[in-house]
Length: 394
Image 1 (spheres, rainbow, N blue to C red):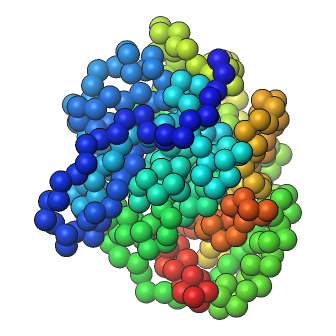
Image 2 (cartoon, rainbow, N blue to C red):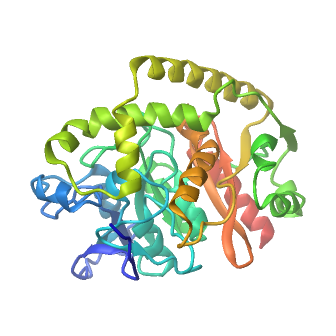
Image 3 (cartoon, helix red, strand yellow):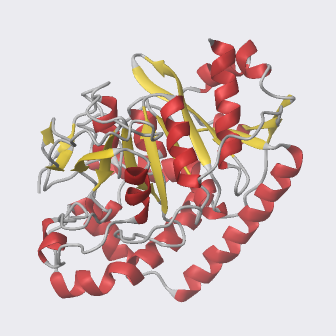
């Protein structure tokens, strides 16, 4: 199956929202693009695959994450394209087309929340609701020049949606500006930003040294707006153990994916893109011993993260190794890039931590940026720090 590129990031567009008069609500008037993993009562959920839609009934309930935003005044403008079963970071879909990255049309939009990211970047929506298991908010946010938050695992309910790997699944969102990202967070967490205090920042040099945009990050860290936002900025390094975090995550995620979807795949034999099918075939071969070894490795990573958070309140890392791959990149290169990318995105997943992507610069016109990684439950504190940095920049 060949993937086509198409400009429409929506699988389904909903009717215009009539003025409800509730202009005092915090998200009133904001257009919400919903990744097609979330159930909305009466609307089809495809999970990026027509065979999924064909073999599952119309939802009779709406995901609580969607309902929360509607209660706060947002209105749904459509359900958006996702990579099949959300098991890809490329942003490609052989059935519904690959949404066009509006910033760099010759590059991938990133996934799996590709449609939600493109809808926001193209100003077709104000809020892009998605999920993040292995990077599916952070990666498309980076590739499309958006702000994006992967919350603390378990902080926001994942009910009434198609799961991928529940131990790592989170509900996240992307916006064009930080103010909107904050408003959504305050609605989701039913709280407000804490009073700002200067935290200690630790820079993860082991990842920074492998980033294509290392020089831009180092220059950004020297800016007064950044330095004034932190009590201290310290370079930190650690030994994650004999197995890279990305590989640990890959095994644990893969085992859960097969537990979640293996029976349906075996019974239905759905038409699935070759790269995703290859990963699913691998998932069913993962042994209990491999899982136990990966869980032990995860424990080591968590201990190392705890040690790092003893030296810093927030960790800084490149969100991705660099720019979005080109649309015509060879499939084998995309596989290698995915495995490399997971070493950058896996820490939040393995630790259940919140991670905030900041689109602070670009390279040769292509967006990229950095992430702030926080302790569990520090989601709003991360946003407070980001707000302070941007206020200094203004």
